[in-house]
Image (tube, rainbow, N blue to C red):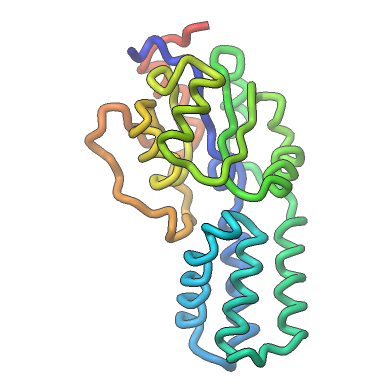
Length: 237
């Protein structure tokens, strides 16, 4: 089975480039704006609850985060939030969307080494415009056979994508930093899955590690992916 691997999916945010750190920085700025209305931990907790409620409406990404901050500010101030605070929140969102892309270690070298032997597919969730912007700025687009920007990542998502661009989930591998979104549903779909932990992972992406699963692997950074693939056997061209 290992020698039949033909397609590799890669997550984008916090797998190929930095992302969560900008959300954390913006949240700190938001908490400071509302500091006179409560303790920092309490404000962050109420923001997280708003994000949970809003994922199904706004999806993942900067826009939903900004709208959740505005909603939280209205709730915390009992509808008395100053217009200047709303303007500051909107400005923070624009700064997030304009921040230069910072690729993570070994990303470019790894994609370049694998793109000739495997069909590489970028599989990311979030705002379409923002994800397209980051991919364009990263300069990594030419390494990918296809790009899939999805609303969520579930087993059927991976099954559909790996069937469309490859030979099905059984001959595919998913690589990413999120156990909840990148690893567990890919394993459930029947693919291999390689976890590349990031030092910052959004709390809603936390999950238990499937350490005993025979198709699960973990590496410190993308530089270790080549060795995993060598252990599994040669690619099928």
